[in-house]
Amino acid sequence: MYSSFTVAGYTFYLYSIMMVVGAMACLGIFTGLTFYRHRGNTAENTFSLGMLVIAMAAALPAAMVFDALFKMGENGGRFILKGATFYGGLLCALALWPLLLLFWRKRKVSIYQRLSDLAVAIPAGHCFGRIGCFLGGCCFGAPTSGPFGVVFPEGSPPYEYYGGAVAIHPTQLYEAAVLLFIFVILFFFAKKEAFPLYLILYGIARFIIECFRADDRGGVFGLALSPAQIISIPLILFGLIILLIRSIRQYRGAGKKT
Image 1 (cartoon, helix red, strand yellow):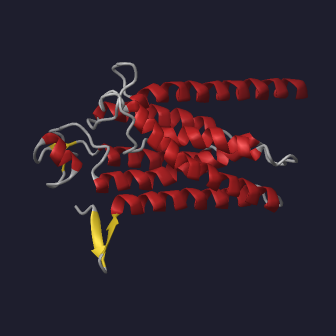
Image 2: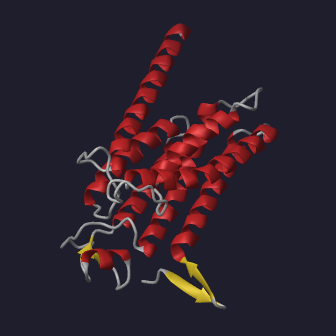
Image 3: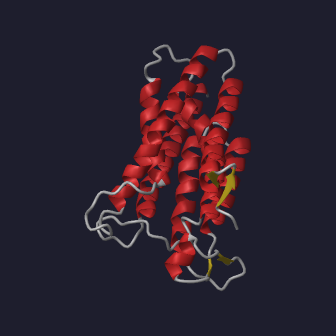
């Protein structure tokens, strides 16, 4: 397993490469969906894409800030910008992007529709990112004697954490597989409800996968749950509330027609 390679004296890290590939995949899929589903709204589609780029650019520092906040306890109360957490970036993008879309006053495509398009693209890009985590050795799992155990090489974060070669859960690959599954479900079967379904499906999956992780992820008020598990709960509830509201509206709409 190689986490980096050198070409002409320059070192390239597979983790960083996969992050870029993931971001490009997310943007590419969103671009294809939004211009296909909302044909005839080229100017508005282009504006939404540009605002998404801005939101994604802001998501990276937000992810680093969230990570630093969660790890202040283990860092002796110090705020250290070192790592990044996906949820921090996701929450930033999902909060900022809709606000930026409001600047387009004569919208023909609702913000909810835009979020549903983006919800399809996010797990595809995130899947590449988690593969990058596996190649870099971060976000690793707890020891296991099961058939899926992976031994990371000397010098990798898991090797240093456990003090030697130990078979551990490849939680990064678990999550990549789940993200691919979520992408397929949302792409083929959930055009209108992709946004709330993404929140629910990923929230549940992330909550479960966190049970198999062992890397340092910080904490929140000394609770037994990891920060990601704590964030997953309201996201799941939010997704369920959206589905309930939309179901009620559709039921009332159907009643009026009859």
